[in-house]
Length: 260
Length: 349
Image (cartoon, rainbow over the protein chains, first blue to last red):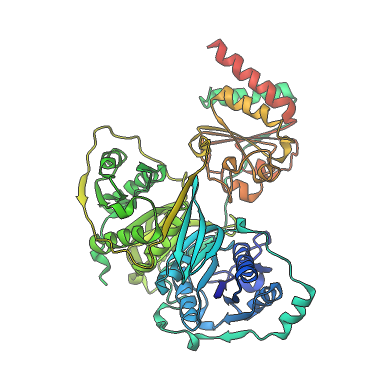
């Protein structure tokens, strides 16, 4: 079987965040990692490869430097890597991004597409289901466990207070949770091989059945009106008293605010 | 498409096991405000099987109209029949705004439907308002500024940034909204809504997945999102045993215990009790942050609380930057004494 894992290079949100003058993210200025949910999705694909036999292709859309996460995926054990990159794709929202990735996927044979549930930069969880919609595939989001059963997948789908065991016929798309597994490390041999392998690079012209009006910043229905570092509520009073006085202080505030 | 054809504020009235989820009422509360600003009304979209009996509840919480799609295919949530139902409602009735809860259902349904009806979707919004886009007209292009737009504000980058998004050229303007952020109205007993029954027809295809098993969490816990008072502990509490101290305080106040991520990682409390970016967003009347340093991811989940009281021995802890009342001191001494004082106060009344 053939599995495509869609991965994203994301800024490590523990570092600082920078913006371009137009309010979009200045990704070039931030430290980059493979998105955690995507990495769990890749690990799931590699385990299916080991147990059932599969060819695993990783695909990303991003700046040329996103080559780094593709090499990392190859070093973990992916067989092929595709980078979709083009200036006209920049500034895309989830609609334009999913349109682009669907356009790239139309060139490839697949039985199963795995994406991460969400990326730690945007936190939207939208691109996976939207790719499935563009390609007319069944989608199972929030996967905690994935098993192959003949021509179908059986997935443990997480909800707030329950889970569903769902069965879908392939081809289908699954969005993976980080809880799915603990991704493996790259091996030294894998790292060496990863830089020997060729990464396929596609641009706008390689996208199939995609209209220009649905790409990049211009093709994005959502527009940023304003973006900024978060302004937080200011600090209130701060006291440093002995324990008894501290208790009296809290009691006076609770009384004043009619809590007690 | 003619954008002016699209009218009215619609909310997705999520139900699970034929019980309306709290988020539906929260969306109605916000939807009513937006509708008032736009001079229009609020419609709840209710999807399910044998759910017509739930319409009056939605009316009591502010729905002017309820569109019901009642079909056996909708008995349990599955992406395809639900997306088909909601997309069909949108195509038939053409709302200008469509709000969906950012729940495990809504974050699957929302993107699927937005792609199907070819519009934008803004995820996990915490603020919704009506305004102009661009916010300030470009000089010389004043006539290009659009009015009465839905401005959708959301945190991103793990709470480090905040962005306000508009969807000026597509309809409906769609958003998923974080649970626990918007306010419900006080229900109006006996309120009635106009009920519209609609069924687009369901033909199972390859996209219909099969539900093999449904496993509900056992020992369903009370939800910290419903608590009026939360006594929340962090790493500084020191051990699972020490949480007894916080539980005693919560009991004395009629509240619940919650925690930061570190506590879950240490195995002191289950994830159901976690507040923050990867946990729940809460806005109780009073939030005690005890031994919580105040990492940005935690603050993102509790900063909308009415009153924040922080107790921490580190005077420089970032939690004090968001606390209304900060107490620098030893929680092991203050918390038990506070519990006793509250009990004594209650006994004296």
